[in-house]
Image (cartoon, rainbow, N blue to C red; front, top):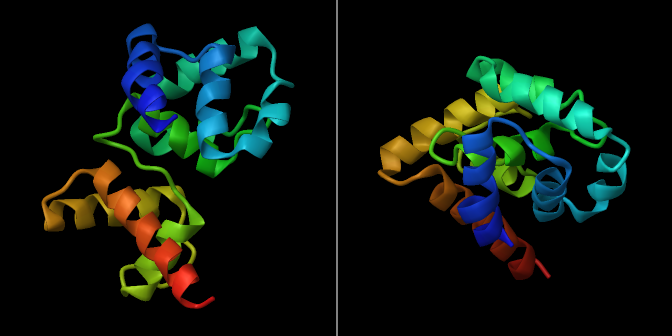
Length: 149
């Protein structure tokens, strides 16, 4: 599903400049399958208008504007942004946060803006892209869970 979101949905949305219902559902399903029922509460015009405004807004405000949609919290907003611009945005996730904390990169629960800054700086330091970093952070946390069982 990640390939579809990043290779098809995201580029189509970036070109169009807004999400439609189907694209919004696909990204929400990728990030959090439980959210799709809440996503469906949004009207088509609200989805188009709010996502058009959000995607055109300054980077620091985009995730906040996306959160105006029903069923879209910061994690899903970050996934919506990542789908469109994976070189600029990354998905915020509790596993990645746990990994960053365990390695001394974060000391407290971050805002999305501060999380993105930490991840961007770390990716640059490690000479990798944000998607690769996100996958590695998630995997490390997952392996820690397995090791503790």
